[in-house]
View (cartoon, helix red, strand yellow):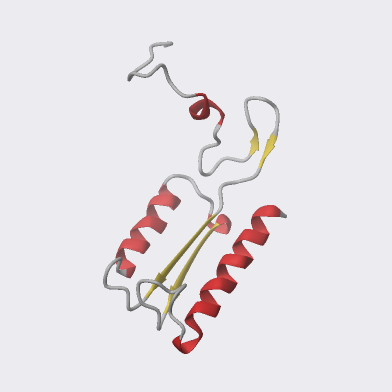
Length: 107
């Protein structure tokens, strides 16, 4: 029923933020876009290995993010910080992925 759990009186954002896989309208009638995610990992990342990024991808999928809104990219020559890795075009590839994803969010 109407029983509330936890302390702090609740959060307005909890009621207004769409769930990851949702689309349509929010409680105030505003159109919302589906949750979109880009998971990028370097194949040579020993700090956050690809298996952890794959687990994140799988968790997002399990939370309802639709396949067309969930992109996973494994950069074969990248290590932990692809945005700082200049050799082999890694930084440029990473930046292009991020720019493409952000452009899709604002369209």
